[in-house]
Image (cartoon, rainbow, N blue to C red; front, side, top):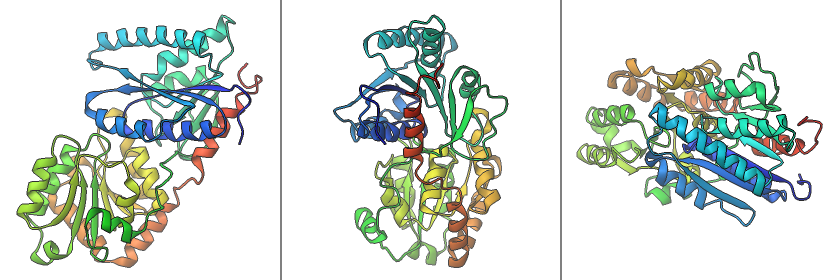
Length: 380
C-alpha cells in the first residue's frame, strides 16, 4: 500500500475512544504509506485524559493532530456556533493544507467539515474526495445525514444496513489498536500484579466509564461468596468519577482488583480476562471479536440505541449475553457471571463465536479505500 506522491488527508473524529481510536489507527497506516495526515478530534473534558494519551502515542512526523475545543457544545445554540467555526476552519485548511480526501468518523463534528469539502467541489474550487466511516451496526444520525453527500461509506459490520445511501458502501471492518491480541496472559498478569491462573473479570464502560456498571459492581462485590472472593480477580476501568468508590468496594470485600480510570494498553487487559462486562460500543465489540472474549453487555440505552443493536448482534452470533440497563440487577449479573466462569467449555464456545465478528485487517482495508479516492474519477 503506497500513497500517491504528495497525497494529503484530513481525518475528523469525535473525542471518545470509539471514534478516535479507528481514526488514529488509519492515520498511522496512511502515514506509513507516505501520505501527509491531519487529524482533528473533539476535545471534551470527560475524555480529555484518554484522548491525550491516545494521540500522544501515535504522533509522527507526517501526522499532525489538533484538538477541537468544544466547551458548552451540549447547548444547541453553542453547537451551531461551533459548526460555523468548524466550517470556517475547514475552508482555511483547504486553502493551506489542500487535502485530497476528507474522512469523517461520525458525530456532528464531522458534518461541517465534510459539507465544506463538498461545497468546494460544488463551486469547482477544488475536488476533494469525501468518505465516512461508520463504526456501529446501526448507522449514526450524523452519518445518515451526510451519506448522500460523500463518495464512499465504509461500514464495520456486514449487518449494518446501508438504507437509502446515495454513496457506494464498502465493508472494511473497524480498525482496532495494533497491539490488541498480541500480549500473553503471563505478561498481562505481571503488569496488573494478578495471578495468571485465577478467573479474571474485565469490567469497562467505554472511554468515559459507565456509572451504572460501576454501581452494579460495587454492590455485587459485597454479595460474592467467600470462595469467590478468594478466587475471582477483577480489572476494572471506571472512568474518572467512580475510581475511588470502586476501589474501596473491592478492598472492603477482600476482592483482588486492579482499578484505574482508563487504560491505553488494552491488549494486556484482554489477555488476562476470562469474561468481560462492558457497554456495547463499537470499538469494544471489535476488540472483543479480535481477541475472542466472551462478554456480558449492558448497552447504553440512549444515543439512538446504537449500542443495543451492537449488543444484539453479539448475542445473535452467540458471543455474549445482553442485559438491558433497566433489567441489569446485581442478581442477574452475578448469576450470569457465575454460570459463565464456572464453565470453561462455554467460555471457549462463546469466545469462538465472538471471533466470528472479527473483520481481519480492517485498518489496511479502510486505508486502501481512502487511497483509492486519489483516482479523480471516484471523487467526481
